[in-house]
Image (tube, rainbow, N blue to C red; front, top):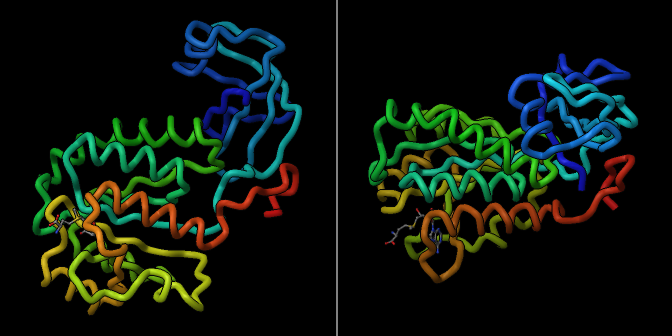
Length: 254
Ligand code: SAM
């Protein structure tokens, strides 16, 4: 598969594309691409442009040979409100959630979050954005998942009011099975709350329920937060047919 790059929209000027700065350097010195090689340029609109390189220097020029909907972009818009986790676990959720098809990540400060300092978390933003970008390019996404600033649980629940369905997997016994909760729903936009390493406090689950989130079980086993996040994302995307392949040209699911 040709290398894929999200680029500023103004670098794409049909019938040509001009790539500059670090990307031109990466293409020239790291990937050692040459004129005649093909790449895919993405302007984060959901479209992708096939490009044949014509000049590889301090800037890189290319000729656009095609434009089509990015076939790997889910139709379901899934927002993951992830209780903040220790760095490596949180970054793993960002990378794997991007590969799976998450549209927006909201780092959420919970009562039992080990990492709660907004300033410290905000300093991670550029590193986290890079992890998301690289995973989106590698997995063939057509849009870059959004990365929201850290939210308190109350702020996250307020933001989640816009979703057609908001789920809060909670490991406390007695929550309804996911399959039962999803029966009869076909939302285009879902919010998913996953707790931190210590889980949601009962008062937080109550706060979420009062805000319209639906508590749900992910089965009888207690999953680590990073496992629960990705398992729930995978199941939701599979359940709503986002694992079907799509026609390459039209982008229509086959
Ligand atoms: N209280 C757990 C413990 O004692 O290990 C910690 C919570 S778990 C590590 C982190 C999050 O994953 C939970 O807040 C919940 O969102 C989700 N989770 C894990 N297992 C789950 C299950 N079986 N059903 C529903 N949610 C689960």
